[in-house]
Image (cartoon, rainbow over the protein chains, first blue to last red):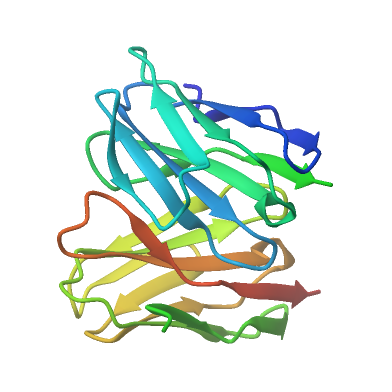
Length: 111
Length: 111
């Protein structure tokens, strides 16, 4: 049974560029949440998608946007990248609840 | 003000030397408290969920307890493979599933 899978694993972008990160939830899960984890910090909630709608959003600017597809997979888009956006981006899935299963993340470096 | 505070930030133990990690929280209407383990370059791995004061959960050398203000993760006779960062997270009342994480405790167990 495949767990949460994320792609790519690593990414290097330049300031001002745009990036798209992808996530496939654990089989049977319908809710996807995205978290940002800076070095030495705990994960911070970006947003959550359920039934293709953004259900809840954390304290992140509109440069961060997302999408959920009918097959429950999800994308995280970040526009106008800043150096401070460098972090590990984690996707977590659950079945209509908060019992989160995390992927191994995408390490984004902005230069 | 941090809603979830973990201490200590780092802990170095000798193999077999038992100790405890602390997680204190100030959220209202706690719906659940979660412990995760995170290895370098990986996503958080679920360990325990606690829902009410007085509850305890055990798994191998780990035991988690919960009071109205804090949780402890007790590690009995640790082994080098227990070395990791241990994250605590809380789910607030009224939340749709947004976990609030602490910064974690980095545990190193030397043989």
